[in-house]
Amino acid sequence: MADQPGLHDFMPNVEEGFSATAGTALAPGHGPVATEAHIVEALREVFDPEIPVNLYDLGLIYEISIAKDGTVKIDMSLTAPGCPVAGEMPGDVARAVAGVAGTGEVTVTLVWEPPWTPERMSEDARLALGFL
Image (cartoon, rainbow, N blue to C red; front, side, top):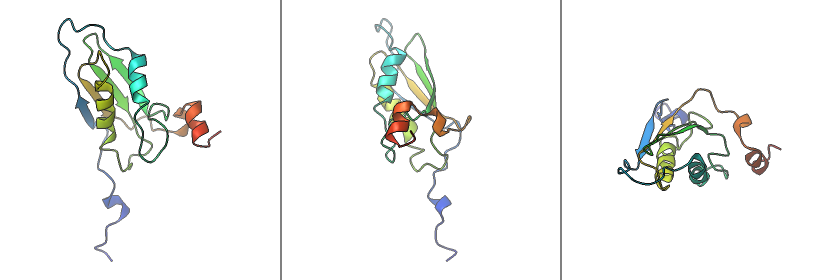
């Protein structure tokens, strides 16, 4: 029995600071840079495969910063550090945001502080998950 894998063997080893990048720098004179509203709209299209609510409304997006050159930096968390898709979610988020017109290179960094709690969810997310 000692050779059988335990639960910890299936959990990803994704530490704070893990990041994913997508997109390319915008050319000079590229036109308007994406707004935060456009980026949030894209984030609302990214779902955790185990939860029927988008990552933004789950409260997993902690910070969005947009530079004048269209570079976007996002800090995000997950519902738990041992989330089975921890290594995939930052890339999914980066690719979704990189698809928004007016974005250049997008970097999404995984953070564990402050820890995520259900209080971070939007009212719509709480309603969808039966928290209200």
